[in-house]
Image (cartoon, rainbow, N blue to C red):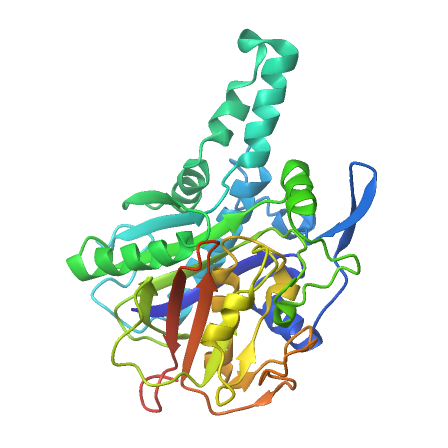
Length: 368
């Protein structure tokens, strides 16, 4: 299964160029927010990044979560169509028989809109709440908006799970493609920042008082809430892909795969103790963690995968945005051209269960 297109909206901007620029520039201070009278930080998406009147013309009443998802999915679809080689289905967006599926992965979904809806019930009573707010609070709203805005009529599904939602979405996308249910699948994730979430983060976890997530500190790694969306256009045809999704496993180590050329860990301060990541780090394999660019999100694996896919496409290693390294791990300190073929993205949940995504670069002669 190949990543044929990619779209992203995050705190540093919108689109692949913004991602590349952020990876080159390294850590930038997140926005300051106030939580119960305390100063804190958050990686928030600028409304300007999702102010697309043409794309969102029929979504004026949609919430921020759905708008971020539609923008990212639209860019993944557009980018993939430009790069896809001729196929029996030259026009996947309509009419020519190509079927596109949509899978939205999210940990917390439209929790901001849900709390708004509950607040309205408390203030106005059951009869006085907005039906629009209620409809936007449904977890599947973002997927529905994507299908509607992009004219997609294939199967649509929302996968909700705390830490491994994106991994499940990739596994399901592969099943749909292998069974012929779809010619392509738009799979991605979306999360939104909210005051309630930020309060829980700051109360139950260790906030980064200087705004820096420090992934290789491990205990604590510190956390800064984030938001954004990243989507991938997936297909079995090779095309001019970013890379191949070689393997996705949850609690089951991938078999018959050589050691990776790079490990990307999803440490972002959402575990009280992230020392478990020591088990997947090796002095022989360099490691990276890009959560300081995106923020702490349960579905942050998708954002790290985006960084890995761009790395394989450009054959360039990107320096860790925060290089605090008290344990002396072998980490990537410089941004430079490199020869890299296999990247392993690793995520642990609070039960120390492990999920892995292996991304393989396109070989010479295969369309790079």
